Length: 396
Image 1 (cartoon, rainbow, N blue to C red):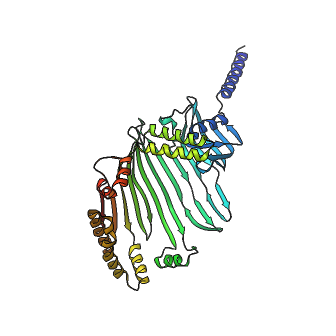
Image 2: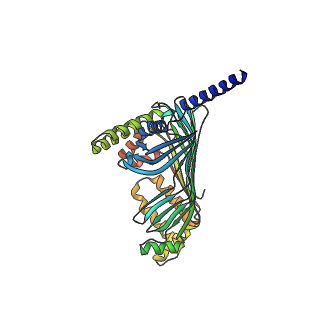
Image 3: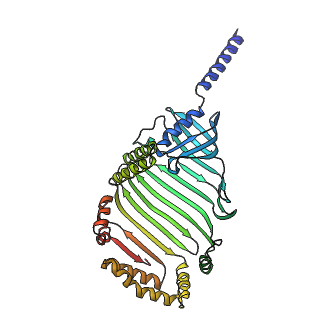
């Protein structure tokens, strides 16, 4: 009797587990639907020919993406495998989304990328516009070795592209970092003889470098600080752009999404785009400019450029630099901005004598609404440099 009861209990337990597993099994179509609910306000939608579920893995086959930004053209992206998928409050948490290698070739030109994946994706049950749940956020994004071909010849490549996002525990701030490593560009195949001559003279036939980006987004006031956006190439130099704006709030994002959706839903595409432009002009009034800078650090190319340009004029690089210094005040006189003209001349003279770095900053004493900046630019452009507190320095 005890044995029979044990067997009955075991069978009942097995049946219960089977029923429970069936009840909580993932639905690949629902995962796709949740993804589209999150991405469609941004003008992007996904479709799949089929889906398979194996435990916490969902495989979507024959996936295509349609984006309004490219005339709703449907682009095939192959199979997508979602691993570590768990249901949470009617939505889904996805540990990793892995994509098929990308191989797009047309008329001898193409792009080839592998090892593409996204980690840490959250798909809410019902994204609420104007909240953090309405944003397509992930913890990281990765694209491995990528090659670009033209006329069946490789002209550029990157080692990897990575992007990492970290949300504060109280969801008040988002930190962002991105990098493109091992950038290689072959410029030797240019068909223009003059350009080819200049490239060879300057030693720029093969460029090697990297791109880095760092930024912070504070959600309450919509302050977006990009503290580094730098291109750094060997034997060429480093170009770094920083900027800060305010007003890019979740409510702003909501209004932007609504404007995009209205434009996409309008059967008259020209009218839709016109309405989108008008909406953007209105939205710009909510943004304020905090400041920006652009800095270039030379890595040896400036003296070569002076030598090459001077050679075309029958002089050496130093003589050519002196001629530029002599002409610059005359060329700048038409600006009618004495203070800015003096800054430009002083910085240019210092850089031409000893090319190290040059930097332009525009940091007003307090944040300025974009409409005020545009109004000043149209009404009295000469005052714009003062209004933005433009400063130009060299070799600092």
